[in-house]
Length: 314
Image 1 (cartoon, rainbow, N blue to C red):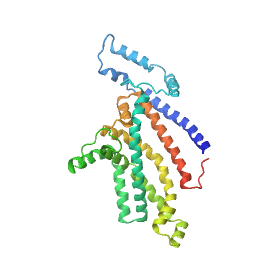
Image 2: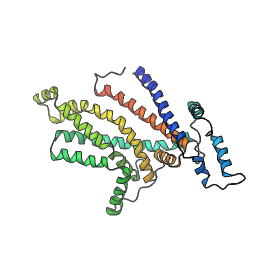
Image 3: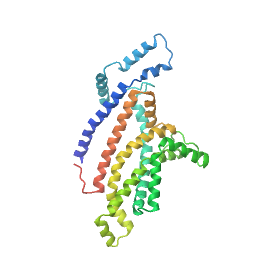
Image 4: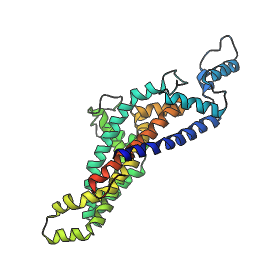
């Protein structure tokens, strides 16, 4: 197990370097100049705007060759320093460290609800294959999948706030157990839910066709016993695999949810960085997002031996 973890983490380093190189290269080649936007609303004092731009670019090292800038950033990153945001003059790591726990709570809650709703719905759809129950579950979840968060959120607000009057407009962060977190978590869950339902349905159908399931039925075991003891354990392997990809969707979902509901989370930092072309923050959120995806896939791999003892990690 330890050897496997060391190997996976070792292979993750080149992946992070490639992601970082591509992101750094795109920001370098971008025709947009964040320094000009930073100075747009600042009064010019003793020097011309071009002189101020040149001085600030030199201050941040933006006037140096690409490889020099990239190498310098890697050296600073190895020391745990992600730089200072151009717009706001704040430490990038502190910005991420203060906001990431909020988005992590939302993401974990959404992932938990996705599992406890998606797995039973997928199993039920498989057991009622080609019936109206199957069609209703699959078609309804697919509708949620096709409607993006930034469209679904206003629709849900109109329905719940203006039509049904069951809540006020949820804004800000008041903890994961507050009523303001219900709608953001629900909206984040809608994206990955159809994936879990479809994967569970397909997995259950495949396992139900196995010989050992027929043998269990012939022995007189109840349907619930067969499903819980023999079917779900094997059927959940592809579902667990899909959770590695679901993490990416949850990270993207926090960007829209944080913006719509004014939540001071990791997504709001990323949205502000991309909208203002704040290169140090863009690099910071890209690194953290990549690390989260890699760690999630490693954790997913650790669940394989639990679901199937025949699987060994080496």
